[in-house]
Image 1 (tube, rainbow, N blue to C red):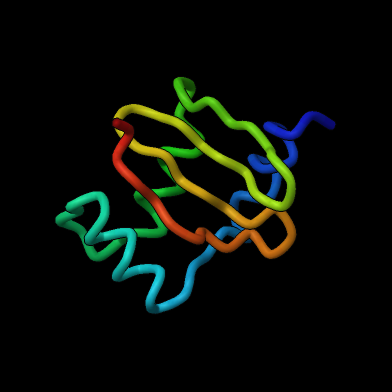
Image 2: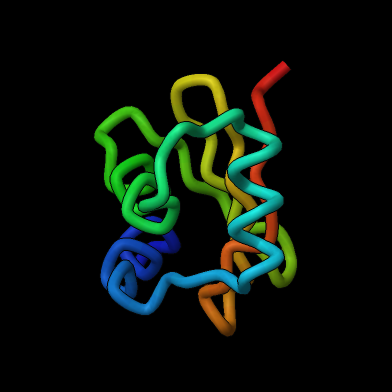
Length: 82
């Protein structure tokens, strides 16, 4: 199974912490309370470029980069793509 398929197969397991929610909303200037659902939609987007480096997956899509721990499926952070 490729890395992309592995991440997409475990999409229901993706989560974040309370501080992670605050950090993601702030870094991406999101105007939604459904941050996890927003991130899952970005990850499953056909335009998403998913790579794995070490212990993290990096999902580049539209104008943002999501960093996800490969073992716990925790969204660590998100940044706008520069």
